[in-house]
Structure formats: C-alpha cells, structure tokens
Length: 332
Picture (cartoon, rainbow, N blue to C red):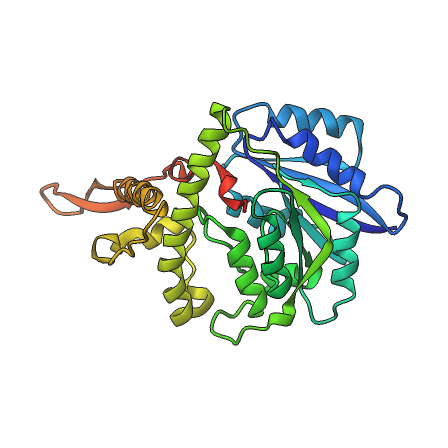
C-alpha cells in the first residue's frame, strides 16, 4: 500500500484529539490503496493531550507522537515539513479539533493524484451554520483551509529546497501556504489557480458549539480575536512580500510590529470592531515585550581607565510567551 502521512496539529486539545485520531484511522478503513501514518504534533500543550496521544500510540503503531515545546501552529508546521515529513506521494494536514468523514483521507489523495498541475487539495466543511456557503466558495475558487488539506511531496520539497519557513507566531498558516503554493513559492509571480483543487466528497466536521459552556464561549472569544490578529498580520506581511518576495517574510511575525505606531489601522465596522481592538492591543503588548528584550550590557574596553559602554544585546526570550496559544483561529 502507498504510505499516507497525516500531520495533526494539536494544542491543548484533550477534549477533541481522541475523536480526531480515531476519525482518521476510520477514514482509511475498507480500502487497500493507502496506509496511513499519523504524526500528532502536540505543540506547547499544558493539558492532557500528550497523555492521550501517547496512550493511542501505544495501542496503534500507525499513531506517532511528536512533542514540540513551542505552542505555535506555524512553528509546528515548519517542524513537520523540515524535520518529520517522510518521502511520500502526498501529505495530509489536519487540525486536532476536527474529525474526518469516512473515506475523506483517501479521497483527498485520489483527487490530488488525478490533478497533474495541482500541488494542493482541500476538503470541504460539513455541518455548521455556514458550511453550505463555505462549500460553494471553496468549490468555485479552491484555496487551502487549515482544517483539512493535502500537499503533494513536490510542494514539501519546494519549501525545503528554497529554505522557506512560515513566520513563527503567524496566525492563519493555511492562507499563507495556499498563497505560496499558488505562486510556486514566489510571492511576486502570477497566481496559478490550477495549483489547488477541491475534493467535494472529502469532508471535515467541527465539534458542535455549546453556547452554555464556559469553555466553548472562551474558545469562541479567543478565536474571534485570532481572526482579527490574522487580518492585521496580513496587512503588514502582504506589502513586504510583494516588494521583497520570500525575503520579506520575517523569522518571527512580531518583527513586523515595529511600525505599528505609524500604521493607519483599518477600522472595520460591526462585530469585528470589538475583536479588532483586543487584537491590536495584544499585538502592541507582544511588540513591547519583544523590544524590552534589548537591554544595555556593560563591557570593558582596553583603555587605561575602565569605561562601561552600553551595547544593545538581545536577551533570549521565550517566544512562546509572545504567541497566543489558542489555535482555534485556524478554524472556519
């Protein structure tokens, strides 16, 4: 059978990760074409996610735990692409809080394999208030959604060969991956719509939202803030990439926040306004904490009288403390 690596990204997903993993394994039942290997990248989790994955891995050799200290999905995506991904025809990427429909995994790989010009294949949402609207949008104009998609190994090798890494702390890695894939990793090139196709019979399902659950309400609140942070990050990142290409992508997204004080912030109306304000404040705090890492350190110079000269030195800072650790923003 053809190996089918599946990268599952999980941060504090003890409520969902078991159902996610079991849905992937079930998705590949009753077929003899693909053999799934699940790489569960648990990044920065402080709950019981690691224990659950370790338990499932002990019972099933197809499940493999990958622990990452930094709680950041873009960083975990980089780690999979550069350090973990085996050679295969294609790779599936999935969020740790959704489930696959039966047969969705093999269908993604089949549709992608039948499209010679495509590098990516995206699944469609099922269930939820806006799923039909999103399905129509994806079918008419396929683009990468982080919940469930597949990339050909050729795309993985492009990222490796060109040394392209997503900025740590960037929210909405799926949008950036889709943008780069559609341009063959050259942000200044013309977009190639044929690079992404949709698998209409491959679906993913969200866990239902419980409006009387404090956990779900908190998750929704932070998800909306993350949506707003993502909006502003693209406002900063887009012009840099258009002018400088791949070189315009910083190692850490906070590096783009330096000119926030002179940036004319777009004012969006409606419900977005509230979350935009929270997002802008969060970004400013991240910028200020990053700046405060530069402190003067005295050193001696070889002159008759010792003189202390302040030299700005960047002190190591836990980057994960600057990154919002609720990755529900990658959901629809």
